[in-house]
Image (tube, rainbow, N blue to C red; front, side):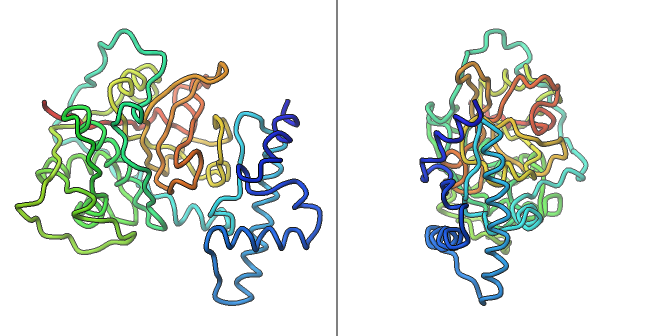
Length: 336
């Protein structure tokens, strides 16, 4: 089965970014690297740097190809991260600070515990509650994107308006608990939005991929408010699905595997632990060919994964779920 699945998509260069033929000679590898550079707009300061990146690229391609030969439920591809070593990737693109103490301004009980009938599938994108896929770039601000996605969701559900909100305001202004491009936690950010009187729109406070000075509030600018936030009970898939059936969630996962770095499509069930290091948003769940999954919105741009999303397997037989996805989920509330 794995061999058939591999051969089926390996012929489609657009999905994984290479074909088995590319691995047959150094000339073909060099041509592949040059075309990959062109596709992703890459250039290097020196010949030495380019040579180093080519070596990293070859190592990553070997890992991608070996994985694709073994695995049939998901596949890896040569995305824009293919010239980064795994250590470089983790340093640049993750940013959850799990060591921060979890804090509550006013402890709130899980509000969906009495939900009885769960729909078989939910997709908040189709319901109009998910904004465009964004790109955090090489700034450890995933916590801000996770927070904003959940707030954008509940705001649309309550008001009917989908408004893209500002991650940059959180990065610049949510201090000292969160730490800009050096990481943070979603619950702290929810608390900040409440105490700050709301969050500005993305177009009024755009993202610049680095920390800046907190911009002064302008009275005439619209803000989006929330009224509170809740934690989903830890390591509890049923509670997680009850909450997700009602709104998008902020979730923490361990995303530091190479499987995540190069994920290109399918239902991910690769190796990962529970050392939570990345904030994302759960925006739905469903089943495909008998395999249950959660749809997760990432903040690595729309070229990554399935147009910026990943489907992660559920019902994996572990209370914490795949990559620890059920360990630290939370969601904002908004009064009608």
